[in-house]
Length: 529
Image (cartoon, rainbow, N blue to C red; front, top):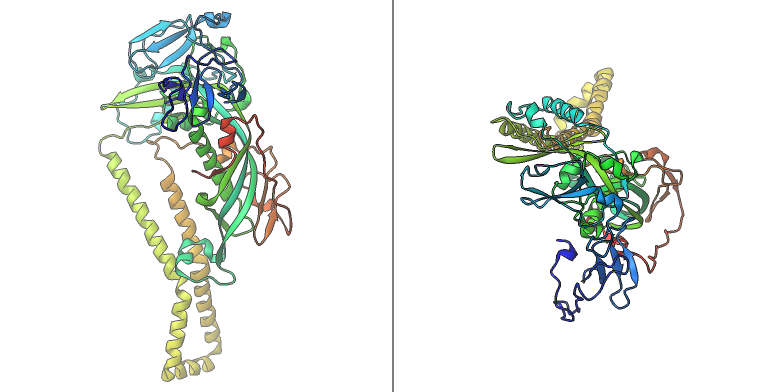
């Protein structure tokens, strides 16, 4: 629930935390004249229309939530703009969805639930997005792309996909908050050298000078760019994420002409409502990038529970993103689908024909079983040196066998040499080569298991999609060795690390007095907290 949707308490009456709550009628926003609400989590009066934050004592502005063009309510105190006079609001009485369109675009059913219980009314608030990505794909193309996608899905019910079904596609602009930010990470984790990169070796065998793991700490600095967060509740977050990425180079300033013939949903969540969701996704991307930085080890595993993130120089833009949206009800279940109106990417979950889902699950169980066998085989191979030592001791304790072996070696030195080379090659292969091959095979199996079935919704894009390659990246280890990276490292390029012996720790950043609450919450946080 948005903080302004919470019922106002009686003016002057302390809440459960002992703080006095200002009623909706006691204070007005200095920016737009709308009602202000006090939120104890943020310690400020908040305006739901323009996103302003204000000191309860002085009504002095203490920040905002990143809206470049704050919206205001048409409550009689503000004149309806000429652009908004050409628009109308369509409201569904069944699911509560609200979309905005031009007056020439009629709607007889709800875009989201298909209900005919829709009404048309004059706008209740300004409609002022900052940017928009215009549609590049028309309905015929979207239907064709969806039909082609359905043909690639095995074991889809025959009656599910039909051209009559595809006609349900509606063009929709999704209200989205696009976030860019600098990221600073205090990285903590384990550096692995030699065979210790294999978890089976680490768990079962002792460390030595070449094979060991140790705690490591480091710093990493980079920038994430144009990470989108949808600001509405009627489309699942996972569905929107599966339709990503969008090409933000094609983003243009919003003009009313782009809305003609289309509908755009009104946002019902501001960034402050999604603070935790936003920072958790950014944390996930920060973790993915840190896992790519090895700090000079053969492998490095980041420990998210003891790593911390700091976000600086955030920028937030209100953007309308184009999608073709459709809901299909099948066998009592509603399935939602999106075709990216810019790239044509199809996203959504698809049902199975009867019995096939069970068979696919059985196949995945078999793959999981191969991982257990693989781990057991690596454990046995790593034990070969101990087995060889046991055999040598057995021969050493048997004087008769030892004597026979020495006689044979003396009589046939060439065969002795060949057998020795063969045994050495087998031991080397068993100890060094085969475990690495099995470990690579296990990684491939795990990757295959982690991949979504084509019946499932595609995963959200990885950090690589939102990593700003134009920003300088700096990373170094802060304990024993000291590695600095100074030459514009690109994502995943490990060859450009320049290891040195000394460099000062980065200076801590101090937030200014005008920092927003959104910025404050990103100033220093436990990763994935």
